[in-house]
Image 1 (cartoon, helix red, strand yellow):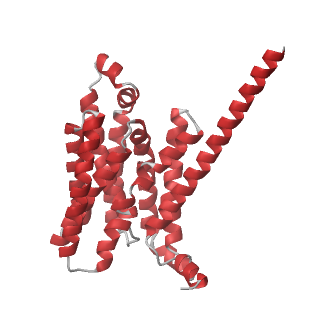
Image 2 (cartoon, rainbow, N blue to C red):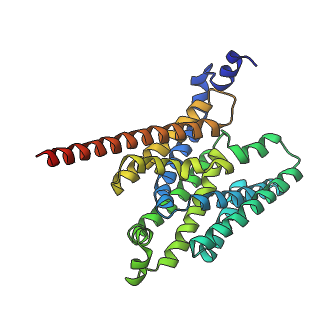
Length: 296
């Protein structure tokens, strides 16, 4: 394949306007998931759960693959797998070392189960591929409503526990001494995280869900230390990656995930460069002030 054909497969905006009308619900779904991912991602980073997201996504993938095999609803299967993984991690992974070892056990087990179920599935190959890497599908009005309601429930629950969860995330020992139910909050958040992973899989796939739940928040933390601004930027970055990825994928023949993950990565690199530049200017400023004081 020459360069021209390669670019044509990645970006092809013929009849783009007609196609755009057909995926309005998909765009709204991407915006909802971007909002959810941006909010959840801030706590994922605060609580150092990036590895946990990957572990949950593997069992979510297994649940979705099993649902596909038996002809059940894929989202319900994905949700069941995610919640089971989240509860296991929340109950058993109290200490960081325990949590990492448990995730290390869950990840290959979930991936192996998912591959087993997909190998037994005799339907369309596109359905198998979509579970791993995401795909643009015709999101019906009912599906969009269910997704929106589930996302709103998760976000309302997160807002309800926001302050004690922030306290428990920043300093769990002091929070425990103050009577904050740290363990219950950890379990509750893991369940919310599991639901968020399951909802996100239909956009970017099980293997690339990190692009929604980690990268936007990580990028936001590179450019600001303000808690409110981190949340705001995380949401903006996540929505830009999801909606932008859908709009770009609509013009090509590739799955949606490469577009979403590339946009998310570019945003992170840009934020990292901005953060490094600010840190360098701050260091130079301190050196200048120190030198001036010493000379004086």
